[in-house]
Length: 201
Image (cartoon, rainbow, N blue to C red; front, side):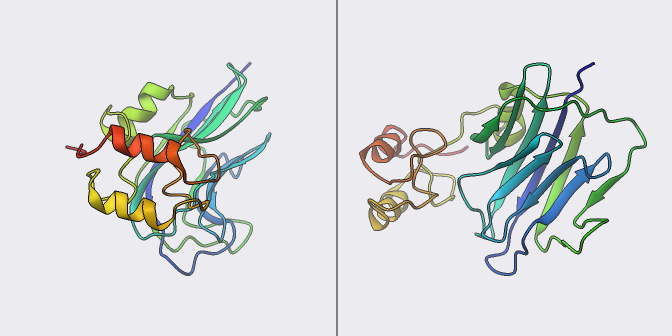
C-alpha cells in the first residue's frame, strides 16, 4: 500500500538565532519533519531522506512552506511561496491516522527549538498536487517571481535590488529558471521585466 502526506504552514524566521535543524512541525512521530538549517534553508525530512531548499529565508518575513511525500507517483517535493525548491524520487509510504502525535516548534528527541513564528499549519494524509499548493500559497495565483523585495509589487525597488546583486548567487534575485541557477543574470531580469508594475492584489 502507498500512503502520501503533505505538511503546509506559514512561517517567519528571524534574521539571527536560527538553530541547526530547528524543528517547525513533525508527525507520526518524527517520520515526516519540516525544519530549518541554521543558514535559513527549509528542510523536508521523510524516511527516504531529505530535501533542502535552494533559497534561504532568514528575512523576518512571512513565507509559505509545503512539503509533499507522494509514493504513489514516486515523488517528494518542497515548495516555498508556491515555487518548487527541490525534489527527490522514491519516497517511502508514510501513513497518518487520526490521533497520531505531532510536535510543533520542538523535537521530542533533541533540543531543536524553533524560534520563529508559525501559522495555519495543515497536515494532510495524502499528497497535494501543484494546483492545490498554489491555492494555499497565493489564492490560486501564479507567484509574482519578480517581486524580489517582497512588497507585493514588481517595481523600481526590485530593479534596484537585482542590480545590487548582479552576477552573484543571491537566492532572492535568482528567480530563473524556477529554483534558480546560482547566478543573477539576464534570465532573472527578463522575468522581472515581464512582470513589471504587476501587483499581488
